[in-house]
Length: 417
Image (cartoon, rainbow, N blue to C red; front, side, top):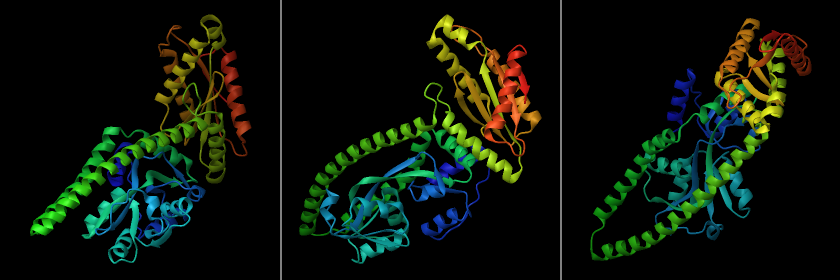
């Protein structure tokens, strides 16, 4: 599924994604930590991993399940089987989650899912715990028989894209890529792969029924089917409740994350996010010697809008200006509300001519935009390029001085600082 998602990203971003091969999940994490690779396509955020990785919002979500031998009963409540021994893949976030949530649980870490399932099959462990899609794929690909999914845990695996945290621009690009995924695209990819798993289960059931001979076996099979039907109904109810709770929690987490860096009115970045992004670009420019700059703009005669038409109309003007800027800036640009009617754009990889053209381009689009009630509105722009030894204050200060020259020179114009 992740490979299909990354193929979409490669097409949309116009870049080639090169695979860095590893032999285990532990090796994958080491490669990311040592900066041998830039992205991990399927990862769950943890506090320890955040020390060297940034994480997008989740784009796939699966419940964790328990795989046991066929001779075990279905697990209605995981709390009833905490005295058993389970296997889980080494360095998965799952192992630490299980130990934190169930301190008495015995978790044996293994190198990969095949080893974990083989220990269950051989009776060395009661169950193997992993995400539903992972367990189903491992059973199918390795041809393991005598093992089934017997229960579900009240926690799940939310799949995000992890990127090296010393490249926040890369994280910003991947977050925008994840946000561009339409629900129908995700559903199409899930249906493509999950449909294969379902078909395999039907084939095994059919094979078992063909081999089930004799009156006694048929009677036992009938009894088992009745038990399975009851358990299936209970499991479906639990799944629905769990999915609803997961969806609500995911929405709340996404909302909190967005609120911390988003301006409430315009829904673009706020001053906190702009300050951190600006400090990062200054450090990167000082280290690598590349050009970047900032554009500051202020809505002309904005106070007259509030005084004449009221603050609601003024707020709508700011929302429209933010929309125009967001629509016409580059994908690498970082846009935010600096304060009041002022906006700031951080422009990586740009020279003096480029930032002047971009500012003029944005000025023209604002001037041509049909605003509600007031019909038209203009903005004045000041732009400045980073210079050696610049601080955030000095760089923004030169852009601010250029903005005021634009104001004093008649407004609706661009000045360079």
